[in-house]
Length: 229
Length: 229
Image 1: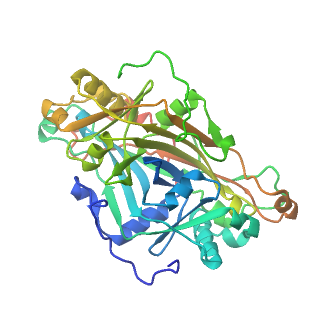
Image 2 (image 1 turned 30 degrees about the vertical axis):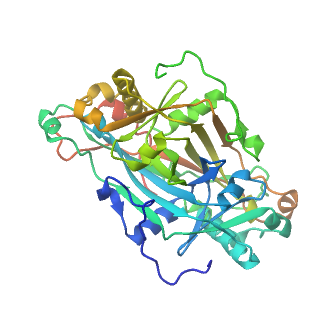
Image 3 (image 1 turned 120 degrees about the vertical axis):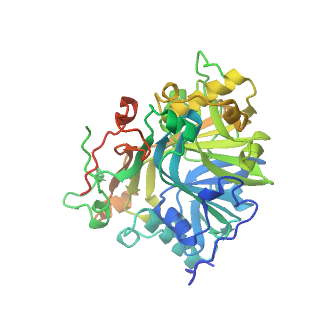
């Protein structure tokens, strides 16, 4: 189950994953789902806890048709997540839409929402594979450069696998979609304020041995010089 | 209920809002809750739909002790949210923690999670106030500059108020927290890759009347010149 799938399964909409409105913003393109997940560093995991929904920000990784989550064996929220259905959302905010009327203010975004029943991994090799996928998802190039998990660390870690089949993708791009009457009236600025997430320059740990340089797989991620206006 | 509260209520932890681990990352400072919410443009709303948790990215606004959400009367998810308990998370990702061992990779973040039972607003003045709060939260200075909601638009809009009392705040800052043995072994770079969300330069709508300049309340938000390395 945790082996990379040779092919991508097309998205299978269900009553949970089918948006009830704004169908033009929904996409069934599996490649878009993968791209949204792979570009995300954080997901929001929705679980049932005492009969109530609870949303938890956490890290994740993807390999083929499988999403991996991990957590501490001491975490009540994640243990609860393992017992039933969960929902996982990954959202990128790409811009704010300034419209000519209050109700047409909006956002450009890419979002993926997954509905699944997580399976707790027990096979040592599968668990290690999943942890590697999670670390490499957030910090590519790091797994082989650092110490591997110890037996004690592994014993304290819950690893979950979620199937990506029941997923929905919503994407909004472009400018404001104002009413014709408001466009005709004119006089109001309308447009997009683009938003981007950037990596700044890496900061070495205080207790780092002198002479250890920032590795290329880290330094190469800082793409924008930070010059505040 | 929608009037600005004269004072802030201290956070009241409950079994839902009390983190079960990593207590050092939890904060009960009400000012921090407000700061995290006010800096967020997007929240993740967890609702129960057919007995399963569903996570939805959406916009919001805050006024005093009240969080406001809105949606279309046609949105099944939001209608479901109105019937029971919900969870709302706002998360800022501030950096990636590169550690000397795989299991100490982490993130710097600020997150707020609210547990509440939303109340649907019916009073026209309260509804208008809430919509203003939501628009001004995302796009400060815009409400008075654009056309107000029409009766038809208002009739198609659900407005919800959530009490902020049952909330939890978690904040992680600083560098990696490696095991002493791994620090002693040395040889591996460790540190933080800071992350920031920036506004790029505004893009005017294609159908904008010539001569309408980008207003200062929009242009002043672009703080970083975008010069890709």
